[in-house]
Amino acid sequence: MERDVIKDKACIVGIGETAVCRKPGSGLSEMALQLKAAVAAIEDAGLKARQIDGILPFPNLGKAEAYAASLGCVDLRFAATINMGGAMPVAALRVAAMAVASGAANHVLVPAGWNGFSGVRVRETAANDSDAIPGAAIARDFYMPFGLNAPPQWYALMARRHMHEYGTRAEHLGAVALAMRKHAQLNPGALMHGKPLTMEAYLASPMITDPYRLLDCCLETDGAAAYVVTTAERARDLGKTPIYIMGAAAGQPYPADEIMNRPEFHRIGLTTAAPEAFAMAGVRPGDVDFAQIYDCFTFEVIQQIEEAGFCARGEGGAFVENGGIELGGRLPVNTHGGLLSQAHLLGLGHVVEAVRQLRGEAGERQVKDAEIGVVTGWGDFGDGSIAILRR
Amino acid sequence: MPMIPKPLPVLAGLVGEYYGWCRQGELRFQRCRQCGAFRHVPRDICAACSSFDWDWVKSSGRGAVYTWTVVARALHPGFAGDEPYAPVVVEMEEGVRVLSQVRDCPPDQLQVGMPVRVEFVAVDDQVTLPYFCRA
Image (cartoon, rainbow over all chains, first blue to last red; front, side, top):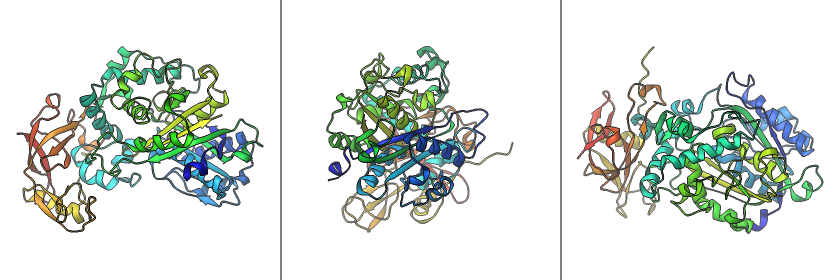
């Protein structure tokens, strides 16, 4: 079974991250940005670039062959594209683990990065009839003519329905925004470092697409990050504390390419992926010390907390209230500030932060004695991925 | 500044057939000839029973509001100036859900379960879109 094949067989051994910015932009190409992060991750692992023989690129942001050629990976043996949008960097943890556990590759590089602020922005990607998402043609033919044009609008439909069924309120969304912002105050590398936020200021921020205000939305960012995975055996010979992949899974809502006609409207990819990953890891949600949860918008954090099993569906609003997801709370979430207050690195930044926490390298925002952490990804119309990591 | 038009569906294949019925003033959904399941958006095969046989069956045109979002800032230039407007998910009597707008309802008056019925708006010579109004 898969759970026996990859459980604890693979480790994250290297992480890398560029500086992040909005104005005036990175001044680099998206490929150069990602190469910078890749070089940093390979160096952090104590490897040489030529030892990388597997590459999992982010869809539409570069080809494995181009990374290999630029980095001097002379023996590229394994490459695959995982078409899950923001769920890709965490879904890639499972694929990388399978690759190294099976011997398909020895060292797998996963880069992701973009000029999300100064380049083509997400809203424009959607508006430009991109084929980047699996449901692009359906969105073009059945959503966009009616003014449903971009991710916050898609997900707002889910948030609004959740509010109707479970009484989730604006203040619950605000609690997510405040927690991310609070954590960013402890992270000098966060875009919102030095800019604390109050509930009053959150509620006063302009509406974008109800129930999402401006401060429910993630930060379009220029920047990149990368990680390297190898076998547990090889990891022990490298310099840094190996971070074990205890469990990893990915899943899709049904149907994945169309939002409106889901028999179970709140079922997302994580709904099936999370129990699979926890079973593989042999731990329960209550056993983890922190979670880095893909926070493209505030409600997605509440929804993923529910669907990952940290609480029952409908109870996520209460879970995030009163500091529940802040450092010192029952489940610290996005200790780096997340997409909402650190930077939008396509979800790869969440993996980097999980590794920092488990290595004990998180400085002021360190979760004391962190041993087990969760990281999730969310993409497209609700694709999901999750990994359970330990030191 | 030049006006940027609203995006329109590409009228090919089954999508073209769906909007072709709209152009004739009829909302029709595919219904599987084998198991009777309705489906939307159009697809080649019934996901319930794998049958490739289906008919375009005329909808009652009636449904109820399922969820919505109120767009306060357009995220496509073609909708700039329309704000606030609300993309609305309507659950039809046939069970399928359609993303549209309820044109005669101010966004702040929308409610889950509000009964609505279809109406058609010709955008140009080729494209007619199904919208909704309060029933």
